[in-house]
Picture 1 (cartoon, rainbow, N blue to C red):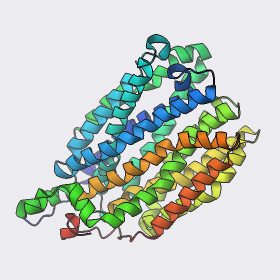
Picture 2 (cartoon, rainbow, N blue to C red; picture 1 turned 60 degrees about the vertical axis):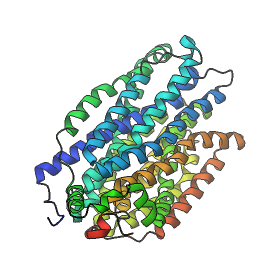
Picture 3 (tube, rainbow, N blue to C red; picture 1 turned 30 degrees about the vertical axis):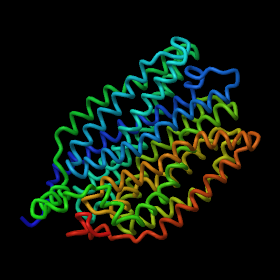
Length: 446
């Protein structure tokens, strides 16, 4: 047994991409509807207070809580994904995340059960974060490890496109409900509709994921372990920490710009325009809806370009764009013209976090061997996600510190973007066309 696995047929590869996209779409939809609801309704429904700003901060704190569960989910599902397989692990993450999101849609509010309502909301958010913690690494690897080496940048970006599609779908459903209902109706039951719809997406995602093949890279690694079973005896997390400490630190730092800027635009930006600027929820929702729709196109384009110039260059460009555009972003949000507000969301979202997110899994996958790759990607992604999840809360605090002016928030995002830019410069990029093999692919060598 030589430890190799045959490449998938075109039909099998399409099925893998569809399964990764469908599952990731549900996960991101679930994630973003919570962020949108936290900015628009959760403060009033679950954290009533005389000061709307205090209620909003409490809602954003609940939003951030889920990020603390994500590293735990990443480690747990990364462990089983590297030992048992990508497919089985991804089915579990889909069930956990989709089920908890649906249950949020049937929660009683503070008016109904008092403090039990926010307690249940926090619990379900933790469960949701736990499931999502294992989704990112697995969905990305299902596609990257199944793709031909020279197309891994492009095909690896397709599941990432689900993030933009998830934002568009989540924002669109919220905008539709808010736009067709009165304020009283929306606060009474309309906000529940986006959460309940996740049940339909869960069923579709499960049906697709149940019919995919395990990745060739993982099957090859298992074949090698049959010849040398000692490599399987060591836990993936132990191998990761022993042989890849430098890459873990660099991946963590590189990821920060994407998660901080994304949550600044998606969650805090919507609440800032709607509440602080008093422009209402329709304008920022529309701006984010258009930006995410464009992101569905730009994300795979960045992936396609990365197969020619390398993922590292695309990531550096995205970090620099975030650094340069974050101050103009807030300046445009303060303008009276609705078109300029929409333009702000479109430019920053697509040139900053979307560019980085498109190539992120392919770039990071090259930094870890197959034996520890699920664990490595999940650990780096989810640990850094803690700061991203706390960003709306941090931004709300900085906004108050700046007496309602957004420049401290912009400075915070700019500093994080600079840190990520430096980390990416230090990454030793492995050509995607020449993936690691042998001992390195098994996760034994750095």
